[in-house]
Length: 245
Image (cartoon, rainbow, N blue to C red; front, side):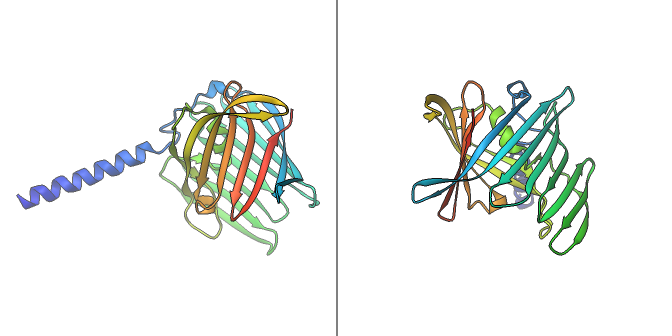
C-alpha cells in the first residue's frame, strides 16, 4: 500500500511539473495574435526622471519588417552623451514567434546568436578583447528576450491578465540561458499622449535578467497595440520612454 501511495505521489509530482511547464508562455504555448503586428518604424524619446523633472538622455529607433515566414525587429539606441550606438537585430518565425537569429553590437561587446537544434554564435568582450564561442543545447521552448516586449502587444490582454514567459538571454557569466519574464498585472486605463486621451492596457512586468528587481510598465494602445510609453523603475531610479508621433 505504501509503495502504491509513493508511486501515485511520484506520478502526480511529474504531472504537476509538466502542467507547470506548459503554463509558461513559449512558442509551444503561444496565444499571440500575429495579425496585430504590422511592418512599421517608430521612435521613442528616452528620459531620466530626477526630482520629477524629465531629462532627455537619448532616442530609441525601432524598425519592424513582417514577412511571410519571419519577422525582423531592428532596434537602434542613441545615447546623447555617448559617441556610439547600440544596435540589436532579432528575427523570429511568423508562425509561432520562435527565435531564429539575434545580434547585438555596442561599444562594450558584440554578440551573435543563431537558434536551431543548438544555439550557436559568439560573444566578443571589447574591454578584454576576449571572444567566446557559443554552443548551447537547450531543450526548453522559449522566446528571444529581445522580442518579448513586442510579444506583449500581441497577447490577449484583459483586466487581471498575468502570465510567465520563457525567454532566452545569453549571459557570459552564467550557464543559465532560459529564464522567465513575468506579467505581474494588466489593467485598462487612460493616459494623455501628446495632448490626446488614449485608452491603453497598462502592463506591469519584471524579469530574471534584473533578478526581478526592475519593474517595467508598458502602456499599450488598445486599438493600434502600439507601445505608447514605457516606465522603468529600479533601485529608486525611474526612466521613461515615450513614443514620438
